[in-house]
Image (cartoon, rainbow, N blue to C red; front, side, top):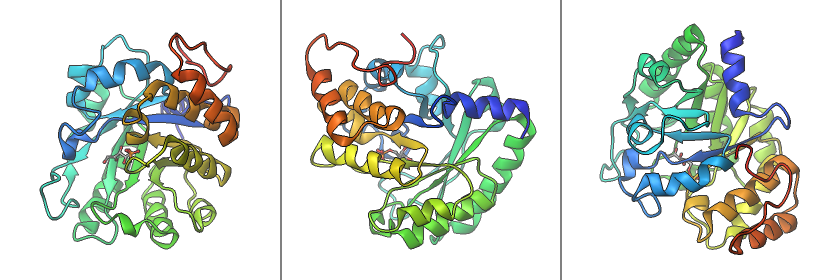
Length: 278
Ligand code: 5RP
């Protein structure tokens, strides 16, 4: 691995803990102005100091994030279907590597739809993206997307999809957590795994439990969206997630971080759970 690629990876996966809290705000690329992300700038600004990488599209990056922001960017480069489409797997590469370099990103991300009508082109595109990533020193995140088929998220499917992305050369795999056999998903995937949160749980506690079990079983962190910015207390929530991912906090301790963070003018609660940049 060349220096530039290693350097960019270490900006997203923190060498001090070997972990990462990525904040996903790329949902608009197929969902439009979904709840909590109607005005991306407003959602993103307060959370920015607490994420190790910000996952989004070039449109939201250019329009809604100040160019002076000191945050590694994980640029989504795939898209092409909307939530109105029957088949969400009909995606292609929509943003070039040249554009990613122009935007000074830390990494690029694309969805792969294993088992779907568009399995073949998405896998081949991932291979090509990795070729370009290796050429220019840009890490590639392979996302094991399931479209509307959320029931697909079992260990057998996630192991297959994650492994395929890793075999294609993706440097990080973003997949889902599953209750049964997540350790096997991690074991069978030679690249580091971050987990998405999925649709908003009924409670913040459930999302903290997901993050806790995922890192306990070997994930290097999360790339989480809705369970952070659709929470009633997004900043407190991302701090609590940081406590789990970077400080080895238990769910109980993370819930304390969450409760403290809900108070007006809440103090910074622990060394690594606090903002890495102020
Ligand atoms: C959207 C994505 C999201 O980034 C990913 O699903 C993470 O967000 P969430 O925690 O809300 O599931 O890839 O297509």
